[in-house]
Image 1: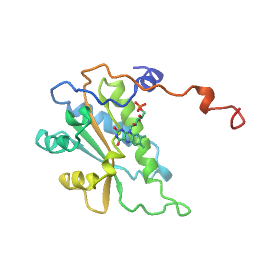
Image 2: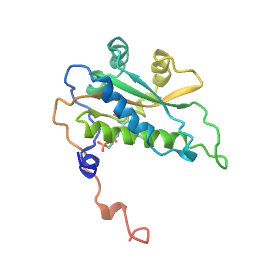
Image 3: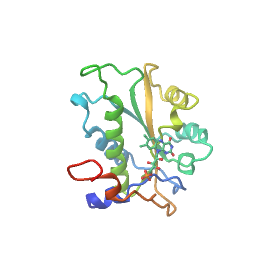
Length: 177
Ligand SMILES: Cc1cc2nc3c(=O)[nH]c(=O)nc-3n(C[C@H](O)[C@H](O)[C@H](O)COP(=O)(O)O)c2cc1C
């Protein structure tokens, strides 16, 4: 798929997935896109656990009571950062940004390869769900799953939300145009 078509088509998918496993080679290709993302000072802080063992997947899927794509996920990619990220530059940590860049790369790969996903982040931080899922995956307690991606082949036509027009959010040379 052409790059700009992939960017346009990428959207969070919260509907049904088709049955059947996802080939490991595809999951590896998706996560490689995450590994190739930029990171602050190139420290490459985000690590990943790819969950494709059906027994493990089925322990995670019932945790979400509303998201159909989460409940029917064929695999998950857990994106992990330090729970208390250290400063790497002038008192700043870039681990959240590193993780977000990796996730966007992976979502584009997911889209280009005919899969779908949804950026699970806010939900994960409620009721210590990130720790509960982290424990299932053997994530050390000094690290945390910051973003989780359920992945599958979309079975429904799920619309992209509208984006604000260019002129409302972007200007040449001066804020507000
Ligand atoms: C930082 C961040 C946190 C998000 N957390 C969640 C979440 O917990 N659950 C969820 O269903 N979607 C979550 N999303 C997805 C957004 O709701 C989605 O990106 C937004 O509605 C725009 O839709 P689109 O991705 O289809 O363009 C999150 C997205 C971002 C960037």
